[in-house]
Length: 113
Image 1 (cartoon, rainbow, N blue to C red):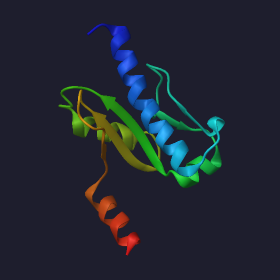
Image 2: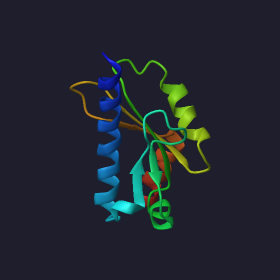
Image 3: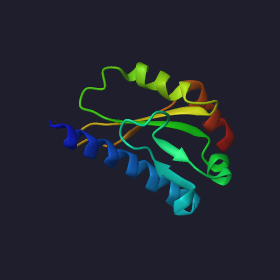
């Protein structure tokens, strides 16, 4: 796979996540953006205070066939800032997956009761 194809594949997943956040929380387009390829920090940049309040996750997106370094990618999401880490992964012809800690998962379930 050439470099331009890799970049396009990465942007594709970032845009899916960004659009889902914007739609769910009805955010303005200026409230959230995706990072440029090679830019440091999290992949989904929350630009407004409102966006940071409604989506309290540090998001790292990896659109890869192998995902061998899953734990390394999750640690990368955790290092970005103090918010809850979220890793989004995707393989060709497979749905995107969101990876969170097991404790956070059960905290979410508990809040629904």
